[in-house]
Image 1 (spheres, rainbow over the protein chains, first blue to last red):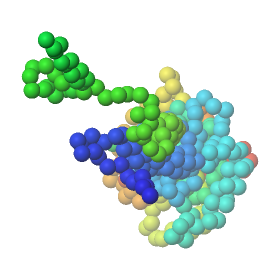
Image 2: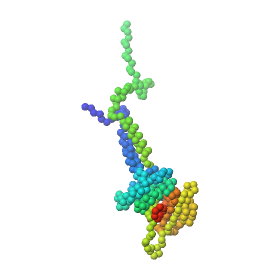
Image 3: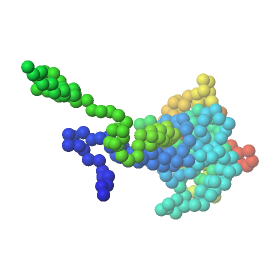
Image 4: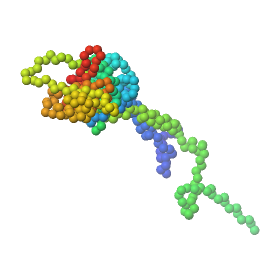
Length: 147
Length: 186
């Protein structure tokens, strides 16, 4: 009984069809990569037109609670983990965050505030007040690295 | 007289890209019909799958949030409490510098404090640099007091200036409706 094996180039050097297997392998890897990166980044980070800075600490997003205050003209939304939250909800989230130590540490991870460059401080202040009421001693103000 | 023998039929003309022995190209046209094509193929047709997979790839590439490198500045937000510590003899209290930030003309920040009023952000930063010259930086406390209209960028720029001047104790004053204001001083 004859079975069909893999394609073998013909004697004249021409194969019958383009071998699509490597292409599909690579494309599938790319899809999985973007799927994971998109999910992880999308949950934590919103599109924010950050102010620029040339000096500062490198950010530690992997272990941080990220508070986004995204668009300059939106209605005062505070976005945490891809969800719009009120000041009270944010305070509860921060309280929970501070009660949980970060991986490999006894202390909780940092709290980062990402706000747009033209956002008035009156929209950032409620988030800072919520952090302060929850017991945070400090927050990290995030800027885009302009170096 | 016998009639001449019939000549054999001419061979089918085929053409290939390779020339024959003479100048005339050899004709070797292959038959292209559906059964012949199908007989050469086996396995599933990958074309629709590749189409869909590439569309999915482009979708995820476009949907991914592109984030460049970011920096951060620590600002204290804890509530200031009256210190009960007794200062050591000869120990000086911290040098507290308060900078008020408001929205000025043309959407630019306007700063008060450090002995100047209605100063631009650059002027305030330069003033801050001159104030801390020769001062032990561990004793310097910078309190940024923004109004609700102050642009967030100005607050970040002041933090950046403090980082450049190696001032570590920087905080943001938060006005509180109920109770005393929270003061950002670590």
